[in-house]
Image: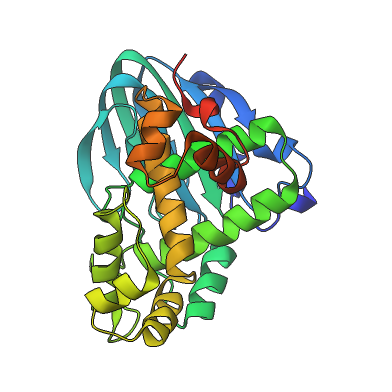
Length: 294
């Protein structure tokens, strides 16, 4: 179809996936969702071997339920990973992904395809090379897992295409700035990158506390104006925007673990449950209750 032409998914045309998965969501069935593809699957109890074709798209997945073991060969080595809620995986662009697994509890996943040109545009705007391989950031992929959960909820709720377009741009910048290149190191964004990483670590340590621009600048020994410029050049967003996004991601994890909205608000630096609810709706398109169990 015309709207899918940006995506490199031709290899899937002859693949009989019905033997392996039962789909329950495809964002492409929603009007305007052309910038990315979000799918939700329930998987067969065990698979001896499934070979997913090579694609230049960035293909990520999040395990949302299940237990067991998965044997993966994504083109950069073989490994065994647990099947457990919160596990995030990445395919290597241009390489086939070989999967074998066995489960003791049914596995469900949310899967994302982001076209290569989105990554290239983000890298070009930041003046850095597009990473050949994406790896989880310092949070082990927890933020990306929260984003995939939110995207699936937004697609299911039928949010308009502007949400999808914005999410695709944001994810591309995140993968370029937080991913890893073929040597396994974080993308180099200039000589002041170490100060940006120090500021990000400082923010992550204080998600439940007020943090000002002056605090951050002082922590990395820069003037507020210089620090703001460095941070935006490295991440594509302001420190306030970054902090809000990380707090929402942390809130998603706590809500999924069963905390009340009030408890989560206190743990994530929001002044009240109402403040959290309003910020959460702006960021994800759904209320916090959408991520609470049961």
